[in-house]
Length: 600
Image (cartoon, rainbow, N blue to C red; front, side):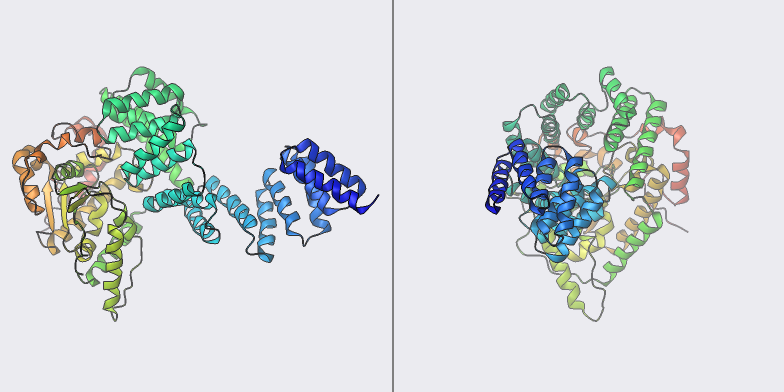
């Protein structure tokens, strides 16, 4: 039989394969192999068609034979790698892809499959730092690969780099035709970065594609809650649960909307989800927190506390799986490095044509949301919520060579410009708030880098604060929140650092407000807060609850209610808090104010 007949038969198989007619393709490939049984191209193509037909085990010998007969042909090795990956031999597939890349570094198909397999393995092992690094390398190697940007977005998100995650996912969307799942995922990332308006736009597009998609309904409920549209938010929660009664995140939103007062049917469903090892670990943790809050709302304190403890046990198990834990010594060393850097830094000039920042800092659950809400009601202030920019800056190294002071200035200017990046439309405001509570760590750096900034520090009863932290499901980067002893230890370090800032920073730059005093005489305290921030009084600041600006925080429901002290829960949990109270007292903390006692 002539050589041309073989190639014509093979070509008919390729045409059928490309058209998705796998049975026809296999007939042609097998006919070609009858003509030339040892031809590596026919073997490889027949193996690939078998693989695409779901016959992986039958495909593998043919794919392997093709590589053995012509080991220098990377196309055959690429098909073998695909077969290995699809038959569960990912490690061997990566070896084959590595051989291709070694001889052909610009082979984007091989690079893409290599990085994709590696990312899948890293996700399975929850190695988020490596996933982020892999995503960076992949996007650099192939900037037009959609999957590369999606992998980078996942890695950045898991590492707490929310702005970077959002930017990477937006790039992914620009390179593909977004699905309802894609748009919903993007909206979720936008909310993590506090980009509420882009989240709403993405959800509008998602709902137009599929108005019944459960994750979209859940995200819409969350956004509506942040915007103060609580009745609408609850409707979306219930619509989501009609589609997916087991979708845990929406129960978390519903629990906040109802201040923990879930009904028996909801509680029964949550208990079943919490017990199931088939449920994603993060969702089991969220389910148990919602269960605990339900029992708390019912006054069942013993049951509630046991549930909070169970949630934190699971959270610590997750941290261990992801090689993340709270290390007090390491955290203390990190804080000391921040202080050491601050002492060497010069004060730079303010960046021209930028809004004046007002930082609202303190321990979480200390009242930062209330103060930002009052400030955000002012016509000259745009409330930006818990911006992640300063947390990102604190991750970056800074040159410590004292012989080059100009390097400090350049670095601070670079950081200041970064801080002002990605601001929303300020709608004419010339002040912004940033209420990420842990920015108290950076107060000295803020004073040097943003010299026109005001830092408002709010302090609250420490026992109430620590208990409230323990009762919340923080994101997994707040590792100190999973044990009362760790919370107390962190509180003591916070109080000591704040005492330093109060000593060394000018009082007009670092202002401390006692939460209890602020609430007790709110009509007088609110104007004083505005005055401390250099703002004239505006009466609408007393009625901040009426603002339509989103409040993306745990406290969004409380923040739109009347001003109230909110203390008293610690007394109900008193029998569980002995070690916490002892640790605070041993650290020199005033149990009423939370301030560091003056040592004799």
